[in-house]
Length: 152
Image (cartoon, rainbow, N blue to C red):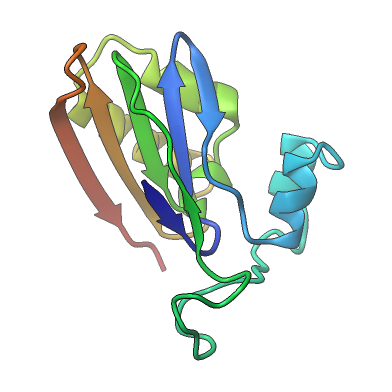
């Protein structure tokens, strides 16, 4: 289960396919999701950081319409899950994220490589990410790496 507000993204990576599981609660993110904007155009759009849902900006009850978005999905065997802030995906194209996730290195090294890569590309925002790797048919979590890097 996933409950989501804002523009933090959850991706699954399996079989060389990076699939976004969450939906951005932003006008530009929505336009990208429905194909009105390319990934590249969305990344450089001047209104990229505007969001229309957030925690703490207004008082909300849990059941408020159009606030919390909940989704359920099955965890895939031999998959990697990436939870990340816009500090990562605003700097790296999907193909660049895939190139790191596909590398034959440890999960910790992938975490560090994604952060370094985003910083090399400009590092304009805080970069937060969690990688979780599912490695067997019992769907147990083998490794979890969490890294938070803040830039000013």
